[in-house]
Image (cartoon, rainbow, N blue to C red; front, side, top):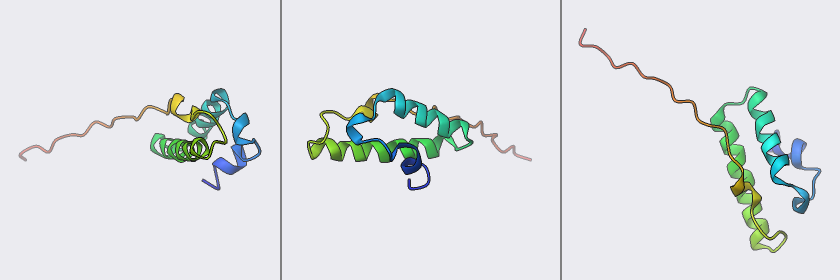
Length: 83
C-alpha cells in the first residue's frame, strides 16, 4: 500500500477524495500492469481505511464501497484426460 496508495492518494485529505478519483486510481493501477486481484486488494485496503474514518467521524460515508473494482478474469482449466 505504501508503494501504490500513498504516492497516488496520500496528498489528498480523506474528506476530499471522491469516487471519480478512486475509480481513476484503480483504473490506472490496472492499466499499469497490476493484476485484478492486486487492484482488488488495494481497494480492500482503501475500503477499510475509509470505514475507520467513518467510525472516527472524519467523514460521513465510505465512498470506496460505491466504487467498482476490476473484474476478475476467469481462467479456463483443462481437465486431465485418462491418457
